[in-house]
Image: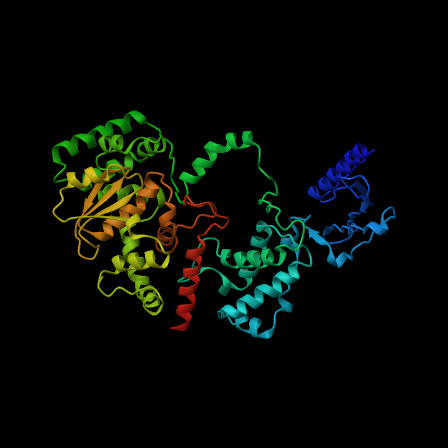
Length: 494
């Protein structure tokens, strides 16, 4: 008898858990199930009720109302099943399109928020938090379990109406422009849901609303995923090759020129050949040719002019001119911000880009040694090469104790020195470009610095994806978004 009751109890429990997992997709009510204690002397009733709202409700709701275990004196008596009010139910998100259709409750915002928004003036941090609280409370009347995709839709609609809330630097939209605001909405809603419902720990749905657990789908999408990741930010990542024989002939001509005149090169002759053979260069790079082979087959590719040429065809960006103009144009405000912030200001580094690079590393709490490797000024190129041969991620080798007092820099990729220059601007610009030219992800240890230059200096803002190895839910690095918003507020305070 005890064994039969135990099996029945287990079957009922499994049924209850299945109903929880699928949020009671069919209308049902489990009235009660009985469990038998281990000694077989005490029988108690545990009642669990599942209720769904009517089909006319704006969102479906399901809740669990376990009845307490009775005392021994109530053994053998039935426990009355109680139902919670609909307002106490845990709402379940069943209409993925509601975020696009719902009317944003701007009328619920107080005048101290609406007045500056309508005047296109920034809100203080306190007022922005207040705005987020009010809007999330209103959205939760439709559903408490709002997906990230729905929050992004809502944030996009809100920031489209009030552009002062967008992520901008010098009127240039960073990323999608609404990630900071959508992140605030998500965090507020997650905080309200934490520990308050049986679904609080349930994994948030993906943008498609599906859970991609099948390995077969992942396996079939590997190549397309890698292609999308490698081509991130590029406009001509894999151009069509029309006449490979002509391209090979031109490549051989450049190899001959390099062997005969590599010390004194007429770039007016070489650059058109590099542009003509760009498609063949991309083909070999995308097929993961080793750096040593690329250096042998394309000796001009990793010289400064070759890097500039390739990066321009790949991204439609003039590498050095963009770096120079944007840094000089924005340096004054950025450096003024750092000078007044808690970040240590560096008066001993006069060059703008050098100083900005170190300050950004400090702000993002990223390590200088992950970017630079220092050598004594007396070291030869071969001695440096012997020391860096095991470094897989790109680095800048510096002859000197700091970047402030050095005028010799080596760009190292895959443990091979590919460029020597006396200009920090050329060294750092080539370092940044190498991640795109050779299909390399940003290292996690420098993702903040590199993404800041990507978005705020070079203006590379693809609609989706990211180049950092560190996987994250938001498209733009949160640390970068924070700095952009702080710079924007600093501009208004000046």
